[in-house]
Length: 70
Image 1 (cartoon, rainbow, N blue to C red):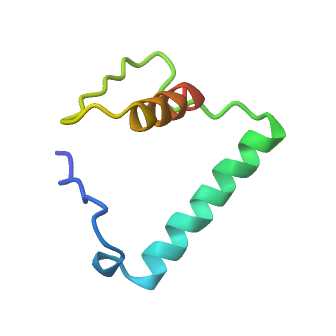
Image 2: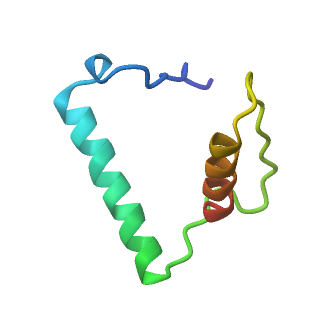
């Protein structure tokens, strides 16, 4: 059974340990990208985006992230 997703709405919803873990993981992923290592967890997956309001900046940012992750 899948666990219920946690939505990131406020830093107050997370402990200092959880925030530090998130930032550490982001740093690790950034280092992988800088080295040119292929980290593609979404390779061979179909991703879709649905937005309530149209925003070119948001759409392009999400597209870039989706491409970078596979």
